[in-house]
Length: 276
Image: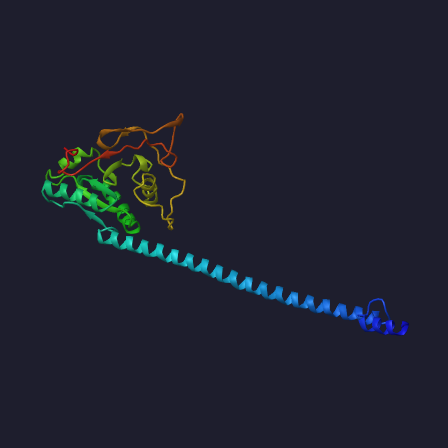
């Protein structure tokens, strides 16, 4: 009986607690290592799948950004095309000797077609001053398609008297800024441009940007915070007072840091009762 039990135990023994202990431990260790290797392989495959999925997600994100950018560029191009069709990019004259009704009508047609207008009211007799403004506006018109640049000769045989009186044009040269069919500001003479006729295109651009007449497009002549523009209180559109603040004796605030109190004068064409 004893010998039989011993033979049965030896047959049932897997190597633990008998003479085959070392072999059993080695077998178990090999099984564990094989399992660990399989788990590592599975983890590596999962990690690889995750990377593929992340790359696909990143690729999808990049593609979405690309499509968004292309849509933005397309929209900008359509806007530029529309602006050019409306005459933007040029510095043109309104009226040019036509009758008053035609000049007035043309003025309002321009205001309906373009969201932003910069209009130079000039007088040929003041050529030495007005030609300076012509030169700078000609340059800006070509680089700021978002705005329509125009000029009006106030000595067109009385045909501009109606507009001149209605818009409060007194001093030549005067630059009128129109936004959304509202005359929001006008620049009389050179007070806002340093009080000198030797101002630069950049000086004029800075003032126009401040009043929202053009965009700051960050080009090579980008406006900086420097400049000598100074001004005192004077009349604005429709004879409404526009003021400059004095921060300290002899020092006036500049256009860049908010010296103006902007005014808005709504105007309508002859078919509307507000414009009488």
